Length: 315
Image (tube, rainbow, N blue to C red; front, top):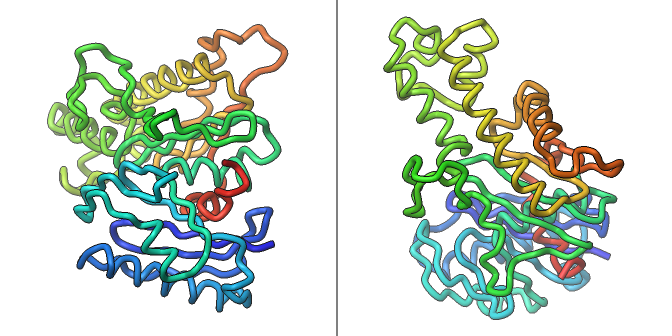
């Protein structure tokens, strides 16, 4: 059996045909139009047909089409309630795509789709439950509990970037203060690195970045690895907040697997080992024989497209 997934982004539309195990058989990426919902749907349909052709699977033999989209999603109505990037308000994307592809369409938030991809074919494969977070522009999250994607009764669940880990702390883009996202997104890491650079003008951070604008998520890790004290301060703070957030989520869900993805996770055990240490210390179930396994995401940018394709298997 074959399934087609589409990952709708602000820059690109990616489509892929996968098998039931989540193996990609053919994948295509096209630029996302900025000229309205009809043009976006046309491009998504073109990407879907091209991916099917590349996979050597006739579109009529695809079981269904799943779409992962940013924004506020109502899956049952196939509706994007709101997505600021393309100024989408109440866009019936499911209906638009069904009219173009004549297939059953499944629509889901992109973070949920990415979590499902890791669960079905990546770091969480074979487990009964998994919570995943992605450290990017914000902090996205998703959960598969007892083999089913969890979204909350109103499809707004698992906004893990917006639980508070520092009451009255840094202002978050959502309007709250002290959110997990305001401390642990890649954006927050870059912002904090720049603040510390201004406090320490002789830091190695300046040599590696060249300027405040040259800072990226790797800069503080690279400088800390070379013994820079200011960078070490940034990384220690970041790891402590991340460990706090991970331990709190584990204590709420106690999933079999907890998966971390996104740019900072590329540091591997440099990041994972100290976060694991904090989790081992602060996990309420630390004395249990059965413990949550903390792992890095395995699928990279393919997680969302695989999860979108396999949506009908986990609803």
